[in-house]
Amino acid sequence: MIRIAFAGKGGSGKSSVSGTFARLLARRDRPVLAVDSDPLPGMAYSLGIAVDDHPTPDDVVIEGPEGGPRWVLRPGLDAAGFIETYASSGPDHVQYLQFGNTWGHFQTLQRGQHAWSQVVREMDPAAWNVVGDLPGGTRQAMFGWAKYADVLALVVEPTAKSIHVARRLQNISKAEWAPSWVVVVANRVEEDSDVEQISEALERPVIGVVPNDAAVTEADKLALSPLDHRPGPFVDAVEQLVGVVEATYDLDIQTPTNGTP
Amino acid sequence: MKIAVVGKGGSGKTSVSGVLARSFARSGHNVVGLDCDTNPNLGLSLGVGDLETERLLSLRDQIDEDEQKHAHTWDDILDAYGTDAPDGVRLTVVNRIDNPEPD
Image (tube, rainbow over all chains, first blue to last red; front, top):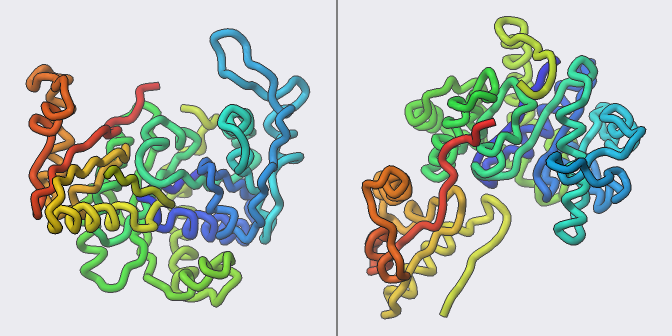
């Protein structure tokens, strides 16, 4: 099973790449669970799933034990049951786990987010390929929100700011819980020198080169998945990326025994 | 006046704030650019450059290592932890998350 998470600067294209990646992986007859830890669920758009304002009822959790997490799944509801009941089903049979509700008071939102974390932590690793999308910037990634992933893909545009963020994110590889493989996906590439600029600045292999594709901007404007609006060079490049990641798993990544090293 | 610029990642917050700050400075205002992002890049769009942006950020580490003293007032903070950007803007950075959390 593949477990990959996408991080990077806000607007670098994480959601577009991760959503497209999830669907293309699912087209290879793999069961795919897309997990979005951004409270503003951009990944839903690129999967072609309507954003759900209230996917998780407040009563999926109860108060946690003293000294433990604030909220835990209610008795009788485990990770598999949660996914079956509350994940959204999208095109190509991708199941999508939204990061709790989009609207509501902070404390109410926490319930769904705790449920999400517990499900991702405790789900059966043999049941799903996991494709994750993190919020922009470094905060969540540095706080260990990508622990479920073997592969952390940094989505980088050929701009100073985007490269800056990726350089900081590389520090994650120093953590004990670091994903086995921290790699770079160059996005919105227009010429060879863009890839050179990115690979010279970062100490990681560039495993995907995704060209700037006007169709993706159009899809964004129309709130459509890149796969459902004039699929072209962008989709071709993400398809190649899926192939590279699959091949890498065959070579040197052990499937973990669970999601939390 | 105090202006905060907010919006989705990639929508152009940093570029807009950088140009706003320098435009106000050019029309004669005293301007402080305050980067509140945990992943601060305002230095890049103000034009202080890559190295100076990083240097500003490393001041925080110097406090942790006792190489730099804490500043106690707003003006001290600007003096000790700020840098001069073009058009007379003074830039300072609130926070950065630099290293992953231990488990």
